[in-house]
Image 1 (tube, one colour):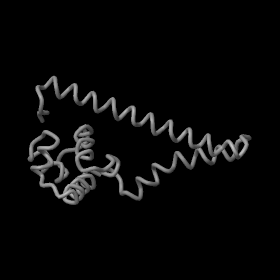
Image 2 (cartoon, helix red, strand yellow; image 1 turned 45 degrees about the vertical axis):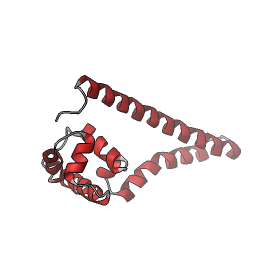
Image 3 (cartoon, one colour; image 1 turned 60 degrees about the vertical axis):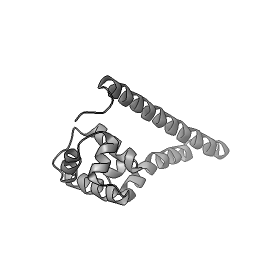
Image 4 (tube, one colour; image 1 turned 180 degrees about the vertical axis):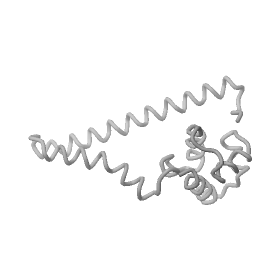
Length: 135
């Protein structure tokens, strides 16, 4: 899995037109760190770094861990499940669509809330370290 993630980081970095050095500078780590990640030599404890890389590359973080098609399927699964359960329920069809939309909007809102908290936490930690992150 680590090698697949490494390949995806390299693929999306090149697709974004960034060098290892440019990517490292944008996320506040060393070029060596990026090179090691792309070689699959750094792994499991890199969650924050992965999210920062994904943010700079303009991709959802899950695309580093799964093929885009697989990731799309994963995102659609909860929605399909909700739709299926609503159809099986005794809720009138005219309310099912609205309820489905509301549930989807709630999940999206909650995810945005979590992402905002993570970003705020990241900024707080960065300030405590005096600006740049040190890896």
